Amino acid sequence: ELCSGAAIDDSITIDDKPYNPFIKCGCNFADSSFCRITALKVYAADVAGPIPPQLWTLIYLTNLNLAQNYLTGSLPPAVGNLTRMEWMTFGINALSGPVPKEIGLLTNLKLLAISSNNFSGSLPEEIGSCTKLQQIYIDSSGLTGRIPSSFANLVD
Image (tube, rainbow, N blue to C red):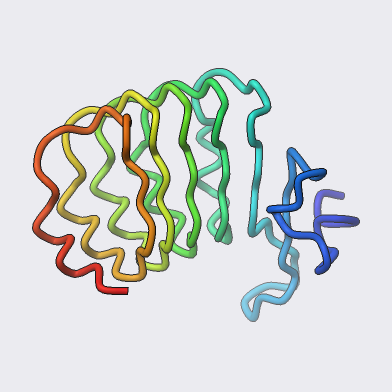
C-alpha cells in the first residue's frame, strides 16, 4: 500500500535526504476516509520525458519536488488542479512552453521554483493571485519580458 510506513510517519518529512523518491500521505480529511498523497519528491533521479498527466489529478498535493531531472514538455493548464499546493519545484529540467495562466489558481502557493528550464514568454499576470507566494525562482528559466504588474499583490 502506498500510504504506509514512512509515508505516514510524522517524524519523516519530504526534506529528509535518505528518502528519495518519496511520498507523504495525509489520512485526516473531512471529506474522505482514505489517505491521500500530500507530498511527492522525485529529486535528481534521472527521470526523463514529459510529466505524466496523472500527476495533475493528485489534488491533495501540497509539496511537489521534481527538480534536477530531465523532464521535457510543458506545464499544462491542468497544473491549476493542484489548488492545495504550497511548495512547487521544477528547477533544473528541460521544461518548455509558456507558464500557464492557471498557475494563478494555486492561491496557497508559497514557493515556485522553475529555474534552469526552457520556458518561453513571460510570467502570466495571474501569478498575482498567488498572494501567499514568498519565494519565486525564475533565473535561467527561459522566461522573458516584463514582470507582471500583479506582482504588487504579493505582499507576504
